Length: 363
Ligand code: C5P
Image (tube, rainbow, N blue to C red):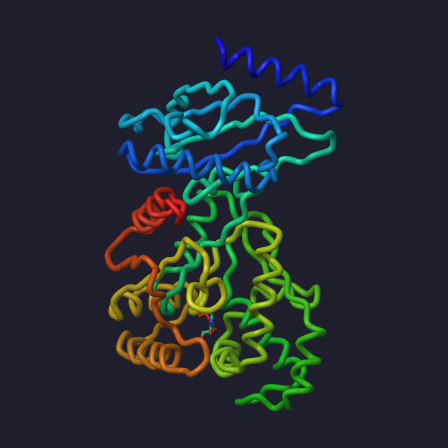
């Protein structure tokens, strides 16, 4: 009752001062232990206060609403807010919706602020997947060719409603540009200065058209040519060039500024987005990767001997893993996903479970 009166007084007092009531949202995930529930709630509340510049003692928090998913039974999340706020706190349980995010705590903080103030909503760890539109994140998926990372990235992207960016396709697009300009024939035929100016004048955009991802080079759809043998060979050669790697990195950064992404490649978790909290390294046995490639080629009408595919893959693995610039390797904090003899859905489930249960790193 006292809390309620205090909150009402704050609302009345601030209405007089030309302020508005702002609702700020947040969510986090935790383990089902009293310590994890309470400290995660405390961290989330503090992050909301800080991100919204509410440290000023004159700012009035009028109410906090807390919800917990039903799998959290070890403690009240609101207990984590004791001593942090003197307003009304209301707890409830979240509706049980199929496939919704487990072990999740949600907060709604109501504050009186100056008119025109915008709310910064805070989603932490696996809870970022609740609002990929406002809490931008990157999922890094690295691995050798044929490990299944592209198909996996596509399925995870569909599940989370975020964009899939195939970084290999970006390198392939640069290769197409250099071939078209006459700057590649069996090797790069251009000096650093010329290369820089060509890259500066290159525009690569990926778009989703009729549910399929298309890649555009200087406004031309080149999706059907980037996988041609000639382009693959050129791509491997040009991918070791530092200026080209920097250019592709910039394209990826620009895309990550405006949206959440799942990016697959060789160096995404180690070099391009080393600070992302969602990192995976996808592998499969050589035999299985060769069989997959053989099947893919058969669908396109080519019958290739398995042993020659195995030796091709071994060569490519060696080149990717032993090059000096951004070699293929598992980041120390990446989770290993072995797709050998697993259905795609099974690997995707594994990746999603890891993402959903990722805790905010300061808890
Ligand atoms: O993944 P994909 O096979 O399409 O990649 C094409 C080439 O681009 C590979 O030969 C690989 O060496 C290079 N690449 C890279 N770094 C990435 C993605 C691809 O060096 N992040």
